[in-house]
Length: 219
Length: 219
DNA sequence: CTCCGTTTGTTGAAATTTCAACAGATATTC
DNA sequence: GAATATCTGTTGAAATTTCAACAAACGGAG
Image (cartoon, rainbow over all chains, first blue to last red; front, side, top):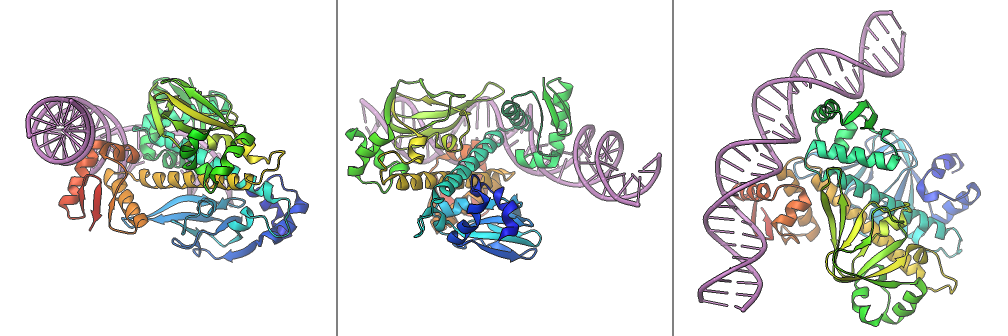
């Protein structure tokens, strides 16, 4: 397990947990490490939602097949990131999405119940883990909140301005760098990339903002 | 406090908590009841995010003023419902929305820290409260997940079919009743009501579904 | 420095959504 | 059960987005 320390320490589930605590804790939690080859299914839609996953190496995608047969990528999962925790904690019977390996990867699986219920050894760290899990869920709720606030606007311009002013507020400055390239921003805003580029140009022409690639300044 | 028992028991924060436990628990948590007149602000945008609110009577709205000066209603709050818990648990400094009374109302306020940290009396119920809070957050995450899954589709038809097939799957039947009227469904799907009605008619004409108001059957 | 793959911007036509206005159907109230 | 208010469906024109295709700008690699 030692070789995973670095990745695990960056995982929100283990924040404020020291390296010495980590190893015994993993034993108590019954953490398992499983490897998957590219394209293999880590969690299958409909499977029981009992485990929390932590990506150790490689990457995966959360996907969903819709009514029209289109595969949608809901989100990517990189090392140190958790997945499945909302399904496990909400106690839904089965998960509504699939998680598929994007490349060969290693995943740590922990049964959610082992985190929530104090074990017989009465380890002291459960409290901290539960905190961390709670904060993680609350943070995800907030991120969704933000996204919905933006995407519920009807026009590309409104979505873009809502996103940009929100970023400016969060960064505390009218100048800031966004974490998306154009295509990613378009996906986040749920608009067409070409239309987004056009709208940015218009706003620039109207003197409402200055921008260069990922750099923006609201005027 | 007794007069609020019925409402509080329906609140997800207090599930699996008996009536006898409730009263002492509220004392330990330092729960306060505050009244607001219509249009009064319960939580103001920018205020510290320390408290969880529970609506006891009356109703309120979570609102946000956007870049264009439009007031958007993010959600309504009815008796027994909680609000602000995601902001408090995520430990963001201040809340990004306002909560405003829709009519005269009574609200119970509980400091989030009092729930998360065992009090000096070492009451046994904290564990259950923390569970409940976690489940509440996870459930909200899932609901957002579902909404984004639906609204990220680009056309009215796709949004509608994604929503309806999802409902059918959840209800385990091709016949089901939805909890929205047309306007509410349009708001949820983030489309125009008239366009939604037109699309439903088309789908009916194509023999893809039968419907009458809130009743739907997928064929 | 040049080549080459990637990202970003531009454009016009086709498809879709929004908007406004109205009519019919269904609830609600007295 | 008649009157009134609310909800739902319909329609056509205007506005917006999507789509496809290409050009320009950028960033590494050699």
